Length: 130
Image (cartoon, rainbow, N blue to C red):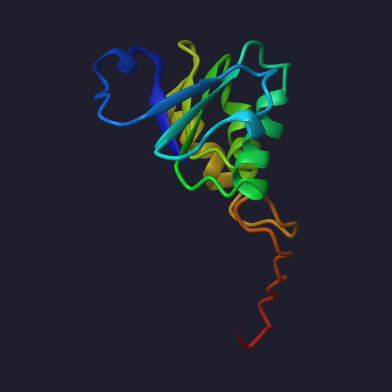
């Protein structure tokens, strides 16, 4: 997952079609033709509707472009964001980029499927020859 510091947004190039979706809007109402990125907003870290929007965009609507988390994004949400279909997250101003990256190092494999890898994962044991 691409991590973006909030203070770097002003210098980001805008050479693609971006759609910002408010968290109470149904993603199925979007016309996705030509859209490169969809920004989903977390107005408060306790409001998880953007997780559902990302999952719907990725799994049911087959959106292949970037899905970016914006707003009140905390590092403890990042792994679940990635599993829900987000590719990028703009961290809240007070969040530490180094700590954020460590979240992904902690959780490298899962037994359950997710928005990106829908099937169940097979457990690998040290005695497993494959």
